[in-house]
Every structure is written in C-alpha cells, then in structure tokens.
Length: 249
Length: 249
DNA sequence: TAGTGGTCTAGACCACAGC
DNA sequence: CTGTGGTCTAGACCACTAA
Image 1 (cartoon, each protein chain N blue to C red):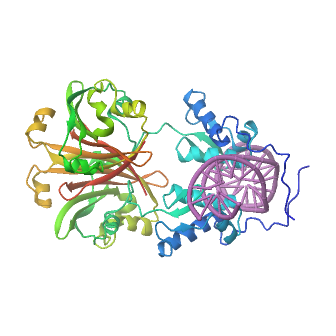
Image 2 (cartoon, protein in one colour):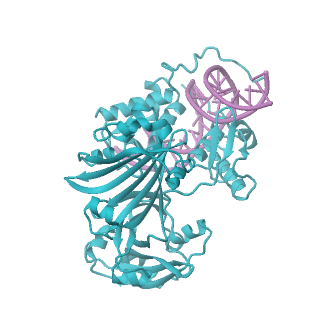
Image 3 (cartoon, rainbow over the protein chains, first blue to last red):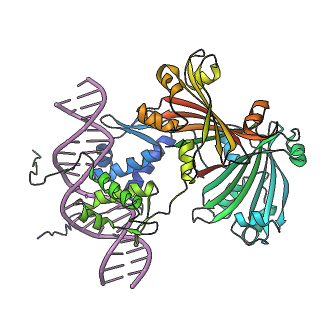
C-alpha cells in the first residue's frame, strides 16, 4: 500500500509567506541590482542554490528557469548560469518620463490642455464608455533641448480620474501618478501606429511645415485587471523620433 | 555510498526521442488545431494528463505551464485549464505572406528588382558586412485587391544567398524559402519605424500624391544563432496599413 | 467537500561542456 | 572525469473555487 504521511518533513517552510522559489529569485535579483553580480558573472548552480537555500533541486530550478524567461539570466547546459547582459527594453510600456530617463535625458513637457471633455464618442469607445461620457483630457507638448517633438493627448474616465485635471503633471509623470496615487497597476498596451501629415495646428505646435510626415501612435493601456485605464494619442515628429520594436518568431 | 540504481523503473521512457512534456504539449496543440478543442474548452487537468500520459504530476505541470506562457491555454487556480481565445499575433515576426494569411487574404506581390548589388555601404553595415560587399537585393511591390500598398526591399549576403535572385519569390515567400531551402531558422527582428514623405518614385509605385505620409519600417532579422540574415526596408501607404504592437510593463 | 492549480521534496538518470 | 543544466518520479501539502 502506498502510504506514509512523512510527518518527519516540516514541509513548505515559507519563511515570510513568500514561496521559496521567489525568495531565491529575489536574492539573485538583489545581488545583481547591488552590483555584486555583473553581466557575464556566473550565478550559483542549481545544486548550490538548493543547498544554500535549503530547498530541493526542482525548486532551485524553478527559480532559475523563471529568471531565464525574464531575461535576467542565461543558462547554458553543461556550463552554468550567467547574469544576462543589460537588455534594451524592447516593447516595454513606458511613460515619456521613463523613456527619457532610459536615454539619460531630462524629460520636459508643457501641459496645453487639461479639462473634462464630453462628446468625443470615438475616444469614449476606446475607453469602453458610452459615447457621451465625460472624460479627463490632458494634452501635453513634449520637447527636448527646447525643441518640440511630440504632442500627446491622454484620455481617462472622468468619473474615476477627475482629480487629474489639477495634478502637477508638469513635474511628475502620469504613469507614476496613476500607479502611486491611484493604486493602479498598469500592465500592457495595445498600440496602433501609422503615419499622418501635419495639419495647421500640429505644424504650429511641432514647428514643422504643414504636410510634414508625422508618426502617430494610439495606445489603449490596460491595468493588471485587464480594464482599460487610459487612451493616448501621440503625434511625433519623425525627424526626431524613431520607434523601436523587437519581434519574435 | 549513496547508491541504488532503481532498475525497477524503466525511467525516461521517451517514446520517440521527444521529452514527455513536449509530447503532452504536442498532443494538446494538435487537439486544438484539429478543432477538437475550442477556445474556452477545458483542457484535461494536471492529474488527468499525468494519468493519461503515464507521467508524474510535475511533468504534466511543466507541459501546461509552458503552454500557458505561450498563451495557448489559461489556467485558473481551483477551476481548471482552458484553451485560450485565438490571439492576435502581436509583435510576431511574420512574412508578408503569413500576415496576409492570418487576415484571411491572398498575398499578392510583384518583383520589381532582383539582382546582386554593390556599393550600398549603409545597408551593408546593417548586415554586418564591409561597405563594398555584394548583396542580393530583392524589391517587391505588395498589393491587395489590385491596389498597391507597400514596397519592400530585402537585402542578404550575396556570398551565401546569390541563388535567391532567381528564386520564384512571386509564388513562395522569402521566409519559407530561407527556412526550407536554406535551412535557416529565423528567430527575431529589431525594427525601426518612422514616417516619411513620398518622393517621386514612391508616389508613382504606390499611387499616392508626392509628399504623402508613409510608414517606413526597417528590419534587421536575426537567425536563431543570432546572426544577421536579412535586412528589410518596407514603405507602407499609411492609409492602407496600420502597425499593431503590444507592449508590456 | 471535491477538484483544481501552486508549491515542494529528495532524490534519479540523461546530455553536454570543459579539463 | 567532474560539474552543469534538462528531464523526470511519486508522491506531499497548501490555497483556492465552486457545488
């Protein structure tokens, strides 16, 4: 008869409510962030991690396998596990502020509109709202080195986000305001990209000739709960901005 | 001495050289492709799969976990595993032929140039070649419903791919030729997107006014061995083509 | 309460890389 | 040869969901 409840094994032994494999991942991430582990350095092997953290091999494996999927480490059979080179963040959903920071530039933008609007049924539809719903609309002009390079219009449900019309978005980013002040976890965005020509208003704002080709991006941004939070239309001067994408087969 | 070869257990029992978890994945994929399982249907539970395929629970889990990462199935704790809805293939590296097929359209294109060229140092650099290297250049006009909507120029190392100048690319796709005839495993692409204005030649080819805004995509396509295989410049009529991207936080 | 997925054990053998 | 990652076992308990 197969049996034996094996009461000798204390079992899970989660020290602080966190699964063991996540604790291991955290420890490795931390060593990388703190600079103790640099790209190319070898990470402790499965067996070593299992011993260090007092877990089974499978658990240590799980931890490393997930880190590999996230691109944090690279594993080579018969050789070992290594810290992956710092990767360019392809296809990452980032705010303007974050994008600038990742390029080592200071973000700079000017709010040119911030009010509750009503009667833009196409935009409301993107947010999954009835056509006449009130929405917060925030329009900002982005620039670098005093040269304008993009106009961004953001729309959100007025019912939930009306406070944003007075938020200091000149200073702090909309993303961080949503995440910190509103407790919203942004998760992913579906984006449509096409090209368009500058009309009179855009030409003026962006300081380009009328008819100049511009890159247009329309983003529907979702929360972790898969609810639409934000709709953004961005118009970019194509001479100052290129979109990078990585595609996989 | 730790020992005990456990000769009672037949062990791996890979039936055809394929790991058990991959066999399970294959079986599930097949049932989905064949229409036996439709989106929303429940997939056999871990325990059931383990029993059916005569493997341990962990192995069945591994199979399902990987399918979930690929977006093939969705798992809900306490409920079960379900076939995921047919997803739009975001950020997938696909040939024109494949893109058309995924939209249910017939691909149609005309070769307007196919020769060995030389002396395009900027393109050569994209392929990681010396500036004066010979390259195969293939230029094609893409259309749908007899309306042109894109011009695509492909460049490859002439040394390796000179045979392509005579390939029947009007009929079969360049991707499938590379993959099947040349045995090259395409893996990913880095893509730059911007907007540009139609010059005289493009206006003529694409049947748009001179100066019309166009979407330009420049792809560097890599093999699984991380070698640059292909450089593609695509110019798209922005009134007939939109680029879709999904970004993650 | 029954069934599901999530975590975990304490090992095993295999394939592969490097010395 | 040793050490690595890759696959696998035969179970276990936990957390969660739905009936």
